[in-house]
Image 1: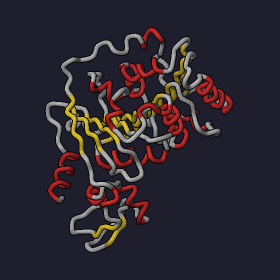
Image 2 (image 1 turned 180 degrees about the vertical axis):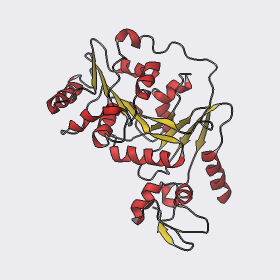
Image 3 (image 1 turned 120 degrees about the vertical axis):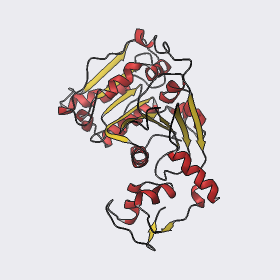
Image 4 (image 1 turned 180 degrees about the horizontal axis):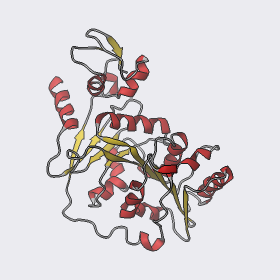
Length: 319
């Protein structure tokens, strides 16, 4: 078992050489989700990279991560669409919960080189709801959001006026009516500030067609053009979305693009111990890695600060 755990940890820290890497990570972000994680081939050379979080629709829900490869940002990568960012694609069993999405984000930030000023969320259908719910709850942490054929769960949506937001919905959507996005936009207008909102209401476009958005270069170019450091957090209005543009979504893929898939299967959570005894040389970061959690969760469980000093023999809660 110790040898297995060592090999798993090495997979997490595995340096990348000639190709990009995609990892399936299961069951170790206690308050988050199982997920796919993609690292671009320049990861080792970069200081920090943007992070893109793809939230799937209801059809990809469940407990089989392979489902999440059927469409979306990870599938676009596997088809050769370049995305120079860390890309994370979690899997939900039911409606997305913003606090769990952010717990996963915090875990990735603790373990990888993330530019925290450039965290982006995009989703479709149930994932569109998830993207807007995350933006509503954490507008100060998300640099920009794209939400396709979704809506929002909350009634108080004025926080959506504070960040760049692109909502796209087709008028021929028979699964999630366009009125769901109309309601969000009307709520934003009622708050009195639409300067950071783009709303494309595409005439005659159905539900499934908007999956093509994930395969367009301009989707990621638009996201990456925003940062938490931007003055007044202005929205970039130089991009657009049309039915004609969606027609081109699958063109230009690189047939020689290779992604190395590593599936790391972690011990079930029930096998993990609730407490950990600090050893010489331990840090909160190393303890988090060893116990498949995050520094933020350790601090929450033990009422620590990230600067809290540890000593050998100290017993801390890890689950």
